[in-house]
Image (cartoon, rainbow, N blue to C red; front, side, top):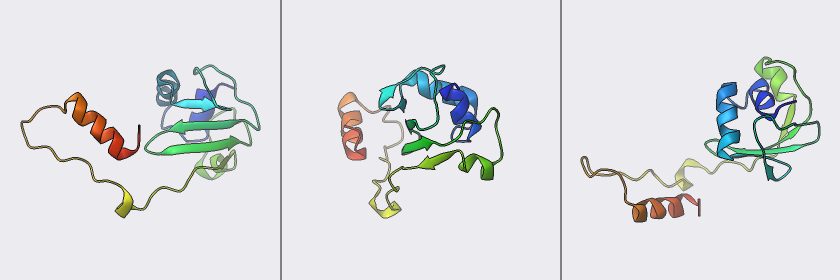
Length: 117
């Protein structure tokens, strides 16, 4: 089964085109290697992807079409690390109005602050 279809069918991606764009951007890994949208996924594979946080799921079942949320949860095991509590998450940088877009140096500092080195 295609990895983008599986992500959409188990409701980890809002739409199939979103799942496809994640794969094309290199945000999806199956068993540790980056995959294209048409790459196959089978039962027992580990799928890692990044949305608002890093997610790691293990494929338990292959679904031929999109199903309801209670059924979709049964198709994978979630091994994702727990999200940080809100008080530990750095607040988004506040820029003065009209200062424009951040410089490359400021973007690097923001990435470092967010832990995306």
